[in-house]
Image (cartoon, rainbow, N blue to C red; front, side, top):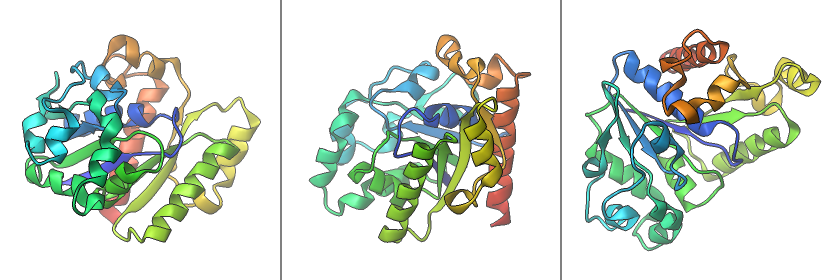
Length: 249
C-alpha cells in the first residue's frame, strides 16, 4: 500500500481538493483506494457524502478499542472507501501525547488495512504538531500543494527543513503548484524559476478555477461533473506524473 499524505503547513492551498480528486482517479484506474479524512473540518467526508463521524471518535481509535478497518465507510464510487473525519480529531494531539511511542501511532493503526488497498490518501489538517509528525512517519509521499507566492514557498521551506531535521529518510516530499493564476506576474515568474525548494516540484500545475470551487456544490470529485475542464485535465496529468515519478524511483 502506498500512502500519500496531502499536506501543507499552510491552510487554504488545495490539500482536500487534491486528496479527493487524486483518490477518485486512483480508484477509477482500478486501484483499491482508501481516504482517511484527518481534518476535523471534514471537507473530504463532505465531498464524498459521508457523515463526519467515527463511532467512539478518536479516543476509540487511539486507545486501541477499535481497529481502523472498523471505521471504514464505502463511498458512491467503486473501489473507493473512506475513513471519515470526526470533530473529536481536534483533540488528537492530546490523545497522542498519552500513547506509548506517540510518534508512530497512526502507522500502527494502518496495519489493519495494509493488503486491502493499493493506495491510501491522507487528507491532513494544516500545521506542524504531533499529529503531523505521525503523518510524516506513516506516509511514503508527502504531496505538498504550493500557491506560487512568497509566503506559500516559505511554508514549503519550513516543511522541508523540519523533515530533514527529524530524519524522515523514507519520506519523499513532492511539491506542486496549486491554485495557479497565470494572469499574475508573480505566479508566472515563480513557476518559471523552480529554484531551491521547488527544484523537485512536479511539472503539472493546478489552475485556480471555478470548477474546483464547485466541488462543494456537487459534493463530488471534479472528474464526475467537469471532465472536459482544464482543471480536471490538470488533476489527471498530476496523478499520471506522480505515478511516473513513483515508478521511476
